[in-house]
Image (cartoon, rainbow, N blue to C red; front, top):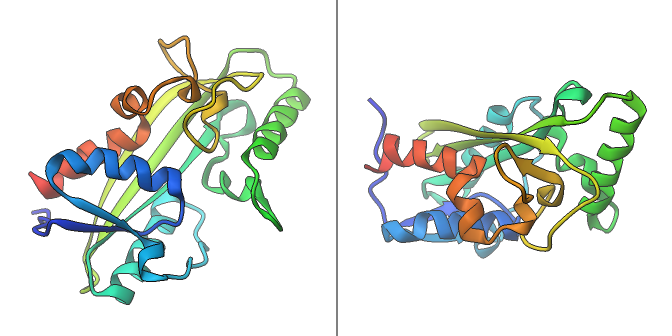
Length: 203
């Protein structure tokens, strides 16, 4: 049996403003107030695992232990088939600079590596999201979501965050960054994972 979440306030173990906004929009309709790690001045734990679920567990358990509250973390990324599913779990790492994360640089790197492979278009890609809901006693529940699409170039769109300007879902003519928040949330990898977690732990 899955453990049920019984509170009305959920700590999201992230310092990513875009991710926090998406979580607020996804959980808000259920009357759940979402708070981020910054509100508790939580440090960002080092992500030392090589899987989405491993890194999500690190973040969720660190936040739950530090605050005494149930904490939800998301570890997500984009996998590009022609790059052997890279950057995958290292999606954010590809954007790291001494001045913070630069996702335009990361998307340019991905495009350059794709060009070097000589792989023909379309470049199949997938966004993955793994959610871990952890309690202070060490228990956790896991939900995984995904959406398939293509890596497109050049970048298109101004909304969203991360790699959204280069990801066009299967069956769509627009990238995530050309969609409204509501349109993206209706189909995204994160909404897929949230729906599974809601069914598991909230319904």
